[in-house]
Length: 287
Ligand code: ATP
Ligand code: ZN
Image 1 (tube, rainbow, N blue to C red):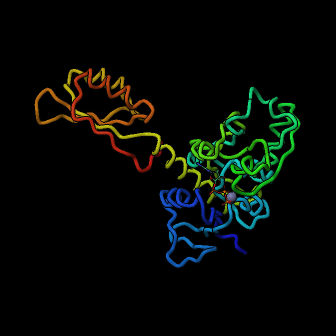
Image 2: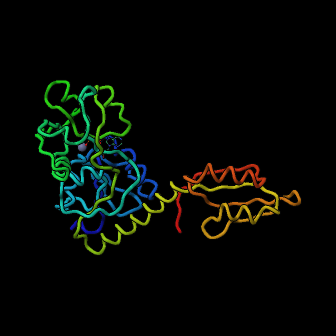
Image 3: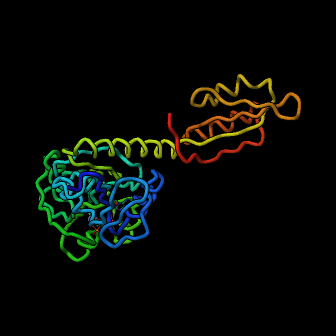
């Protein structure tokens, strides 16, 4: 019964939906055209996609309604369900933070002693306040938390921030980070062997997708006598590919670099006489 394919829960609408589908697609999981608002089947991977409210996903996974799911780490921690964090996904990065009205004289966390704090994340907030030794009144609000201070419902808020522009436009300032979050893949603890193998396969593909996003393929032309210096700059996975150019004394070198090192390496390559440098995205990467 339902044991021959993996049931993958994703957010039915919201910030995670598009990137979850894009990631699954990159992992070779394509949704069959015949899908409705609740579920979809896939052509080339034994799985079914369930479209659910993100806040419900941890509970559905604990209960086995879904086998795995994609959800924000903030929701996973808040819901405190007995589920497995299988892997981080590197998208939907944000943080949960405390914010107060701009004219609030905030010095440190003690400024919140005895105050009313509005949030949709009461457990995470309570835990944070307990650790800081602060007693405050938590008001649970399910949406539009940022307006709570201006309507007199709270003195401060604890909410998700990515750029801070929503806070600013509501007359608030961020004063204290509470937790960092990104999208994660979560799983039921008791998958049967068949489903566990499918999950392992999925995680293998997700890792290739994550690495590919982190690395770039680089091609360049350089004077042949610079080969050793350039290999030291771009050693690649095993060793760079080197091809002769039609022009004597010149070679073409192909390798892989990490996105973070990009600008620094480019300058050093130019100093070695490298020309025609191309940096291109990698679709998948298996080491
Ligand atoms: P609802 O369930 O009512 O639709 P929600 O806040 O749970 O609201 P979204 O706004 O779609 O739903 O957010 C889903 C997840 O995306 C959040 O739990 C969080 O992990 C992440 N997220 C939220 N806001 C941002 C943001 N501004 N930037 C990046 N990631 C965010
Ligand atoms: Zn939600």
